Length: 261
Image: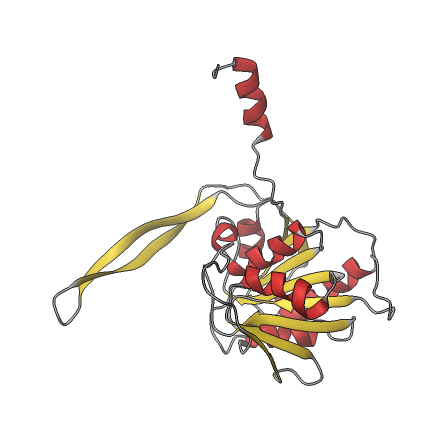
């Protein structure tokens, strides 16, 4: 992989849980010895934002002293906004790699569609920046990131030693178990799994209705090659992702059938 003029790779770090979240601090700690780290992250939680960008209102960004010795900026924007601002206004160049996370909670299966963590990484990939989104299957602010730090360092270190595709995009999920219980890293495909959702209808003190989104996670994919299976069996799951959503098989079928004149 190409390196900066200082011979150190430039590592851009962002997230969707906000710049003060424990996950991003652990991500910085995991890779700060691998290159020049610069953090540009939201000033508040942005989970579930997907690939949203800010339009019609100004974006704010200012420098903060959050990580010892690490250049850090917080923004009023979405995770995708953070990547755009980082390249154009902070780095004034493309970093050698973009890392997003460590997310508090799973981003396996269908979650990748909604995830602000993965959308930030995807935005970097769209901009020809190799990128990785990291998630730990623990929503707690007191989560143990020991195993996550180990595997983040291992994965990023391996990538920085390789000549890799500029559109590389990996979705990495780490099970919430002790490091010694993790069996290793498994390259997977995204499981066909989703939430069977419903809205819980309630009334506020004024009698006005409001709704809470609830649901049960259902896995329709019983393959042992999926991210859901890997995580359930204490493997770190690595799913190569792409931003081209074209269904090429269906494209060929439609062309062959000539359904549309």
